[in-house]
Amino acid sequence: MAGKARKTVRVGTFTGGIVGPSIPMIGPVADGGRILADTAPGCWGPMITPSFHGGHEVTTPVAVEGARVGDAIAIHIRRVRVTSLVTSSGTMIAVEGRYVGDPFVARVCPVCGTESPPTKVVGVGAEAIHCAVCGAEVSPFHFANGYTIVLDGAKKVGVTVAPEVAKRLAEEAAKLMALPKKSEQNPVVALCPADIAGVVTRMRPFLGNIGTTPSIDMPDSHNAGDFGQFLVGAPHKYGISKEQLEHRTDGHLDIDSVRAGAVLICPVKVDGGGVYMGDAHAMQGDGEIAGHTTDVSARVSVEVHVLKGLKIGGPILLPPAEDLPYLARPHKAGEKAAAKALAARFGQKTLEEAAPIQMVGSGANLNEAADNGVARLADLLGMSKDEVLNRVTLTGAVEIGRLPGVVTVTMLAPMKTLEKLGLAPLVKAQYGL
Picture 1: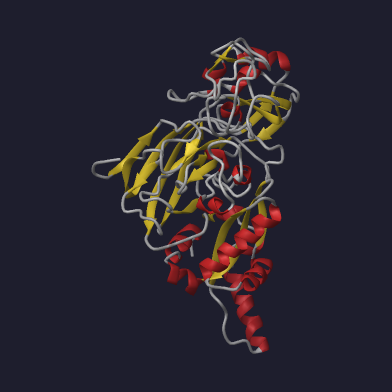
Picture 2 (picture 1 turned 90 degrees about the vertical axis):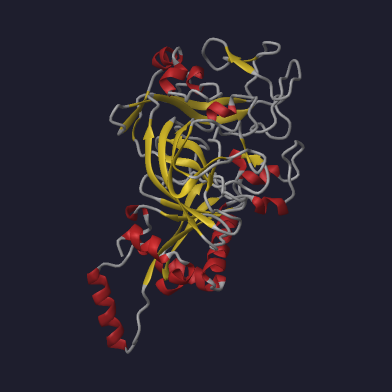
């Protein structure tokens, strides 16, 4: 990273599955500038590419002018435009003998023993991924139940296809998936899974992995409190201690409201911040219950702003207003008038002015993730955990981002507190307050 900050930085290169201080940043982009990215699909493509050291293929990190450790970066998501016409996904089976400790991170050829072997795609079908060294079929994952889905030109709906259609599409897998020029993943459509045909679903694209660089190197798919558990004591070079998991930035979110119109506020744990993104999904139900969803290539535009001195434990999300839990939506004029009348009737002289705030929490399971989100909110807002628990119950919700352990903890926070933190202008602008 060198040179004068630019108003716009374009990125179309990738890290090979690792995020952290060892990955050189490009840029810097100016504070208030834009990052334009061509993102590659996450999950299944990288999962069947054994040379990768993580389960995603995220963009090279971009430094943000003036961002220093202890600050935060507000990432305004302006656009997520799907470019893939086809993708494949489904539930997985890890193939024994083809990895050491973690099939997402430390892969090995079961025949020649090559670690992180280079591969080639030979034909189509479930056994199309072969070791480039010895020729053995080498994918560390197979589908338990999979599907191939086509996406319409208007980017509104998707339809899963039958085996004969999936096989035909597999012949042009990389082209139909619109894999970026610099992407090195094997195209999952080449495997042509088709266990479910004729299902119609809606598209609502979002980014499954977006955030800032953690302060230690880790697989991009494991930069979260749930997947990160698999690194604790792991027998490969990315193994860490439980304490080192605190270096994460929770970039791997899989929260479906991290979409165009959202603002994601991320901690800065290395100078420059190192904003990266990837793992766009065409659609996903809350919880990503299958473990994987419709990973697609996308063209993404975000705007970044440095928030000096805002030290946060994890990401804060300001989703589009319609994505807020019912109780956390800003009160309308009629509701405020009714509350004022009710307070006067019972002699309550003051009413709190409040606005929505949503904290991401992650952990080994949903309970730990919720506890993590509550603790982060309490620390940020200077409240006891018990007060946060009450406020979330009265004015918000805990919602599942991903199983086994990513949630959002939402509540209406006192505006005076948000003003002290410097968050009030962002929140007011986001929700028209």
